[in-house]
Length: 363
Image (cartoon, rainbow, N blue to C red; front, side, top):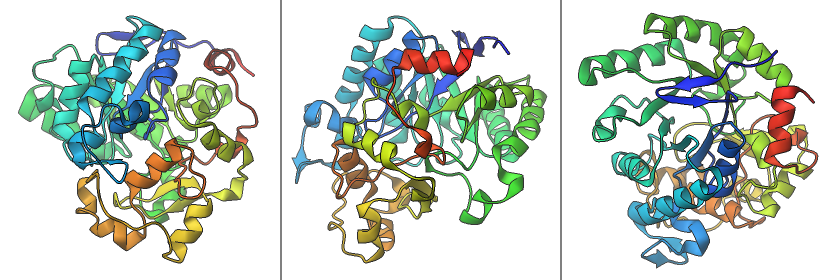
């Protein structure tokens, strides 16, 4: 099967593959820039940009961590990441993933627009007010992430009524993705919530709003999976974890080694201070969490609203900002290594170009 280009607003993605936004520092300039260069849509994560280039763009640190949301989500860091990605991909479309659950959501969306994002992608909550932060940037396409037809319907109704606009595309994320899930623990294992059973209903809902392109995500691994999603009506796919297995991925080599060594049973769901189940590789950190013997929780960065300044972090046993930042820095003792269910399939590190060829031309 050959693929039609993916249209998102005024932008055309030659190869309909969106690289998932992965923070902290897993998809920054090198990965996103190279994916866009190779004809896909590179996505820069806005999470933890105060850690970029050894925290060069964080104005204040406490215990080596960016202090408060304005440093953790550093505007200067995000701009530097976009500038360096542009050196790789030129004028090709580049997206920014901004989680709805973060503190300073509106400010970070605007920062991304100013930094040069062509497309904003938002999940981890229903972004019903997303358009209000891009009023001055009408060329920026808006792409919410949903987990059901109902979620898409709610967003479309709110956006149309309040802002007289609709999503330029929508990402449907099933429960096999890495990181945070839009489902309960129980739903993650139920047939009716699996991606292959959600695509057709969401495509049908999207058709009611003018055939909004639907991008399928969560467990998509190879060309066979892409073909299956396209056959169900998807206009494209989003893939995160598989791109960790590339030379250009911004993750520390230790992060890549964790996935190279992982077995299928090592990739599990866990509680998160964000309030959603999260999927990652079970490592040393999980044992510390189980016994409540992990690093002290101090909430230096104040990263996500649902955590309530460390209250939820203490409840689940870890600070997500600190542990994801540790993973980015390659700390095997305390790092939190997110992965989709298929992460154990990574058996060697290849180039983004080779991966894109495999995905579009076949293994």
